[in-house]
Amino acid sequence: MSQEFYLFLHLISLFTVFIVLGGLTVYMLMGGSKTALSTARRPLAILHGVALTLAFISGFGLIAKMHYSFSSSLWLYGKLFCWLLLGAFPVLAYKQIPARWGNILLLIFVATLATYLVAFKPF
Image 1 (spheres, rainbow, N blue to C red):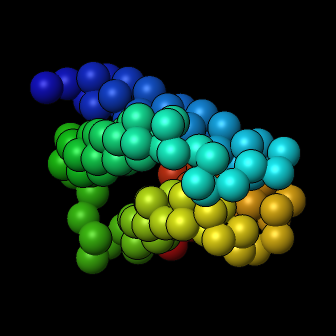
Image 2: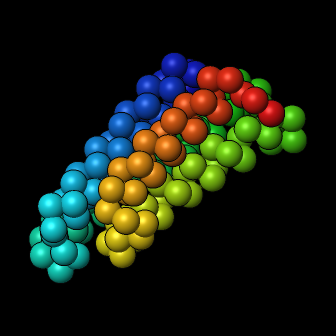
């Protein structure tokens, strides 16, 4: 598969992840509870998991196509950390850790950090 295909798949899957997490965050900000979300919780969790998996696979496809390695491109570890944070985010949102508005700030921070790491490759 081409590098453009992997990039397209990576971006679409990350957009999907952020839409799902943004919707979950807004729901929790409006006073929603984990139990009241039970009808939509399963489809959201499935969509979140599938999108994260596609982002992971397409990300490694991009790494292979662009000939990066973890030993010479340390910024890739930061990207993996961002991916782990996005995977753990629903737990933080349901437990409301950090504070409710902190969830939105955390999403913005993770998106900014991941974009910075990929654009500038600082280390």
